[in-house]
Length: 436
Image (cartoon, rainbow, N blue to C red):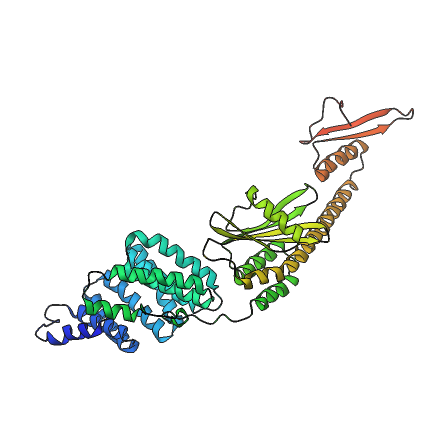
C-alpha cells in the first residue's frame, strides 16, 4: 500500500516483541528494508537487506534468499546502477526458475523490462509488445501489483511514443483496475495507494512513474550505419544477419518476410524471414495490397486478423525485384515516423537485392568455371580413348545435373554411332531410344 507510516508505527510501538528471541530477525530487517525501499532510501534498504539475508542464510531459507535477490535488484535499479542490477537478475533467475517461484519469476521479468526501458538500443515497440504479452499471460493469476506495474510501463511507453490517444485509453483501464483491486481495503490505505499511483492525474503527458531512457537518436543514422557495414560484406548469411539487425533496431517488427522475384520460376522466393517459416506461402489475402504497393511504388499499410501490416515494394523501373512484408502483433498502428523510415530504406533494400542477385550470378559462374577447369584437368590425364569418352559423359552428367548422358559420333559414312550411354548413377543404359 506504500503506507510506510503504518508500518513504522507497527514496528516501533510493539517494543515488547523480541525478534531475536523469536528467531525472526530476518522478518524484522526485511520489514525495515521494505520501508526504506518505499521511501526510496535505497542505501538503507540495501543495508537492512544484507542483515536479513544473513539471518535467512542461517536457517537455509531458499525462498527468502530468492526474494532478497529481487529486492536488491529493485534497490540497485533505484540507485541507477543498472549494471549491478542486471548481474543480480542473471544470478537470481535460474534459482527462481529451478524452485518454481513463479510469482517472483514474473517480478524478475518486470525488472528486466524496466532495465530494457533504460537501454536506448532496445526499441520501445518491442517492449510494448512484451508488456502486452505479460498482461495477457498473467491475467489468470491475479497478480494485482505486478499488473499495476505492467500497466504503468505500458502507459509510460505510449506517452514516450507520443501515442496520446492510446495512452489515454490505457490510463482509463488503469484507473478502473486500481479501483477494482482497492475495493475492500481501508479508506486511508486506498487513498494513499491511489495517490501514490497517480490515479487522479488529469494530463497524461505528466505521467511519470516509470523511467525511460531517451531514444531521440536518429533511427535513420542506425540504418545508414548498418548499410555501411553491409557495403563491406560479401557473405550472404552475414548480410541477412545485418538486415535483420537493422530492421529490428529501426522498426522492431514482430515478424517479417523479405521476398525476391525469380525470373527462373516467374515467382517470388523467400530471401529472408524473421519469426516466420521461410518455406510458408504468402497469404493470398495479402496479394491485393502487395499489387497495390507495386502499382503505387509506395508503402501500403493494412490490417489482417487484428495485426498491423506494412508492405514495401522493390522495383527497378518496371521490373519487380521483390518486396518486404512486416507485421506487428497488434500492439500499435505503425507511426508516421515508421512509415517514413520504411519509405526511406525501400530504395536501399532494392539496390541491395539487385547487388546480391548479381553477386550470386557471378559467384555461380565462377564456381561453374572452376568446376569445368577441374574436369578438364582430370580428362587431360586420361590417354585411353574408350576411358576418355566414358569420363567425358560421366563428368558432364555431374556438371549439368542431368538424368542421362550420351556420346554420339559419326563414322566415315556419316552414320550416328552411340559410343557411350549412361544414366545418372553412371550405369550403362541398355538402349538409346528416346534421345532428343
